[in-house]
Length: 72
Image 1: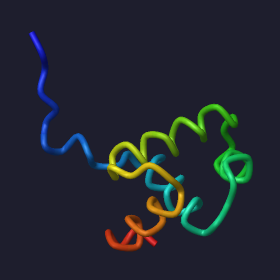
Image 2 (image 1 turned 135 degrees about the horizontal axis):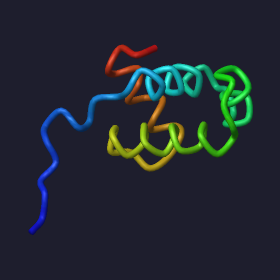
Image 3 (image 1 turned 30 degrees about the vertical axis):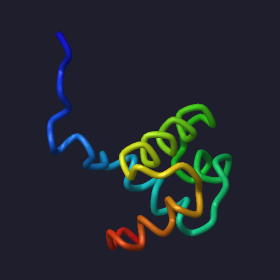
């Protein structure tokens, strides 16, 4: 049996939102990790989730989508 994703599954968590804002400011993953006080791996995971939820494949598209959504 396949579970369908709920419509609200594309909403960012508070930490993903924070990571999205930092990434949109041009920070690299290591800088995001340092600012958020988390590991590089966790910051990278947040960035991956943001891209997945935004439906984009790279940093530039992620920034544009964050701007379109009014996140930054």
